[in-house]
Image (tube, rainbow, N blue to C red; front, side):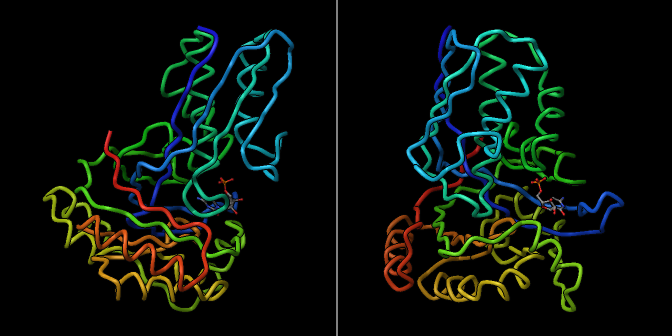
Length: 288
Ligand code: C5P
């Protein structure tokens, strides 16, 4: 095998709760994660030259150590003494710096792909441990599907599959720094915590409406202050037929959940036009 083609899928948060701050400054989290179909294409090819060459359809994307996919390949080469190099091509479709784990998912795909391509036999557990050194969401991105993520995001418990739904993703043009959002939550006065157990119940019962009613992300209020469009898009999702809407991760992407593809499509078009957004995507829940 000299090359591999992978799909690095995006995730959304069904819930996100902060339960404490750790000594290392990271936040203790409790969140329900869900993969959606939208993906970045990740192509990895062995090359003789002992270098990592990264290419992407996005001109402005960093192609060096600042890119998690690059770092993943570099780390595996170094750790496992690989002489050959790799050429990696990222076909980005997931909005960048959006709360959709696009970078983490690309990183997870490169870890998975390097393991396969060089026949390294790295266990899932070790791969997840390596992934965690690169980013908090990487272990989940290796796992995919419906999961409860705790700790920094690395303590993962598989949940029953989330009920099927159409998902519209809408990203305001401004980016939000994850670190800044987490910092702001420490100073926030009003904090609304999700009822994680009720959502797990709803997922177990395949009760989409109950799940949709209980969507909650503790970071939403602080992100909304930094980017008011988050709240405005959320309101428009509900007015245009979504059964639930929430900001994903630390934002700023807001998603709407829909039972009908037709209503989802028309809501996506309305929101794209009204807010003049470039990044609006119609996708659906992806179960493993
Ligand atoms: O781990 P990752 O590099 O994705 O995290 C980016 C930033 O988000 C961290 O530097 C930290 O400020 C914040 N963060 C946090 N608690 C977490 C995950 C991320 O405070 N559990």
